[in-house]
Image 1 (cartoon, rainbow, N blue to C red):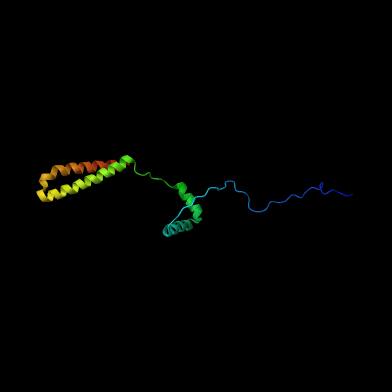
Image 2: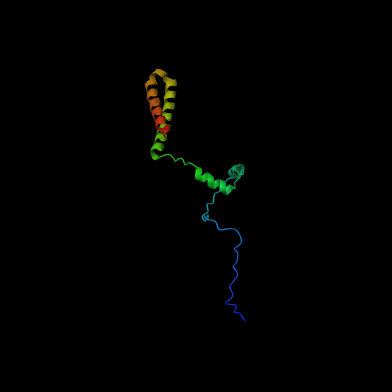
Length: 123
């Protein structure tokens, strides 16, 4: 009784090694850090018992992003800077000519500065 090799059932092979991950990380993000930043990240990751990559992923998920200044807010800051310059000029004028001569102008400038600061702090 001769059996043909083609007819013999192949033994089932066990698949060895690590099981396949259900979620694969295929995208890469390269971040350049200074030595100080790297030490900070590595230290925080070590404290949390994580690798630097895992810590960075968790930190990125929990991070809150603060938007930059809007064009309107940037214009208000420029206006505030101009008003501060005007206030300095009024202070010099008050030293030269006396405080009573520029008192009204100082109050107007201060009110405008307060208004701008309040609108910026609502942000």
